[in-house]
Image 1: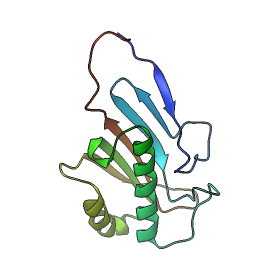
Image 2 (image 1 turned 45 degrees about the horizontal axis):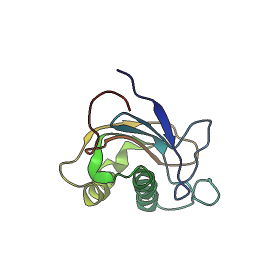
Image 3 (image 1 turned 180 degrees about the horizontal axis):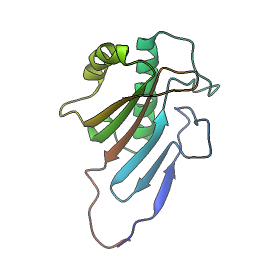
Image 4 (image 1 turned 180 degrees about the vertical axis):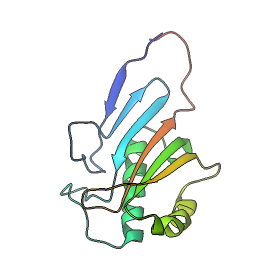
Length: 135
């Protein structure tokens, strides 16, 4: 059984800086492309503190999930990229405030990012999906 891949594009989040959708739905899963602290209007990185960058990044993730009919509650896996691991404690505090229990599985790595200090990609699962033959 195969499921069609369908792009998810919303106006409430930046479009990204490459040839890919904001997210892709396949069966019950929604795979979000990496999201960062980019302006929804200009698609450019914002000049802000680390905490503000994290908040905007999570806002962008949330907006895309909303466009897919989901929320942060439906996220099952997250990968977090930080330019400096010294920010892990601050990131964790902000993350715990925004991500509902039970929190998703998570990987956190240090990475070189272009003009931003944080990027997050995620996988969410639609609980309303019913397995069976494709319609």
